[in-house]
Structure formats: structure tokens, C-alpha cells
Amino acid sequence: QKEVEQNSGPLSVPEGAIASLNCTYSDRGSQSFFWYRQYSGKSPELIMSIYSNGDKEDGRFTAQLNKASQYVSLLIRDSQPSDSATYLCAVNPAGNQFYFGTGTSLTVIP
Amino acid sequence: NAGVTQTPKFRILKIGQSMTLQCTQDMNHNYMYWYRQDPGMGLKLIYYSVGAGITDKGEVPNGYNVSRSTTEDFPLRLELAAPSQTSVYFCASSSAGQETQYFGPGTRLLVL
Image (cartoon, rainbow over all chains, first blue to last red; front, side, top):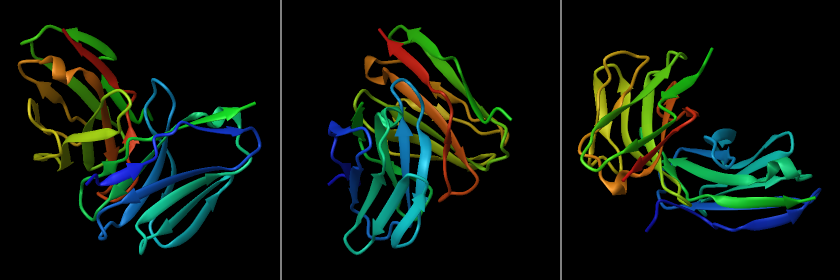
């Protein structure tokens, strides 16, 4: 069983719509959770981090964590063409190692 | 403040050659990591370090070696390059084990 699973997509949404990205993880002891955005040919950059159950909002981005169900999601409101990228979910299962999902490719259509 | 820098940006190796990928960070982070990313895949941890003189294996350490003599530098050594090591290599650093990781620009390696 993979540590972190994401729907690879591609996910296409029209400009201005809400994009919903999901991630599940296998280790119940996981402590910290991250969403990274990666443009083609570039390195990952942090979008959001979340450590406790519930929602965390930052501008157009909202991360949602449900430890009981072992999933973490990212909502992007008012999606823009510049949001088109691959979104990586990363999980830290209480230690020094991060496990990354394979990423979800998002395309925002103008 | 340059963050995390990596050299070279791109390299072609022949099978059996060796090379060192350089990584330097100027954020005084204790934790440093090496990942590889194959096309369409997520990041796989090769090695990590929690401080100068301390390193440990990640998910995919075979064929690689690391050292950490200073806080700033964390080079990755490839011995006897194989086509399976064709990948993009990212170095990252963080202030602590569960904190945000900051990534370098990556090194694209092609082994022929």
C-alpha cells in the first residue's frame, strides 16, 4: 500500500471555478501535512501546511484535514490559469521522512 | 538570501561514470534532504541529514552516497552511474523534521 495516494488527474476546471484536490495517507500517526505546487520543469513550492483537524485558509486556498478518515484536501477558489500546475501532497508520519504523492495535474481553462 | 542552490543544472553521464551533485543552503537549516523525481511520479527520498556529521537512508538509497561536513552543504555522490538513475534530483532543507521543506531548482541527470 502506498503511503500517500492522490488522483493523478488530469483535473480540468474553468476559470473562476473551485478546484478540489484530494489526498489519502496510510500512516495514522502522521503529524504534519503539506501541499506543494510544481510547475512543469520547476521545483516544488509550498502552498499550505496543516497540522490539526479542520480547515486552514490562506487567500484563495483552503486545506482540510480529517485524521480519522486519513485524508487531506486542497480547495482552490476562483481558479486562475496561473494555478495550472501539478499539486503534490506530502505527509510526515512523525519522523524525519516525508512521503509525497504522485501529484494531481490541474488545468484551469480560460 | 539565495535559499537552496544546486549545481549542475543538467548533466549527461555515461554508464559507469561517477559524479557529485552539489547542494548548498544559506538558511542555517539543520535538516537537509535529497530526492529524485522520475517523470510523472512523486518525490522519492534518497538520503537525509539532521545535522552536520549525521546522515540516514531514505526510501531509495542504493547507488548513492552522501556526506554532511558543514551545516550549509549536503553533496550527493553517484558511483557507477546506471540508466535507472536518470532522473531529476532535488535538494531540500528545513529548520526541523516536521517543518516546511524548501527546495532547490533541481539537477536533471541523464545516464546513457
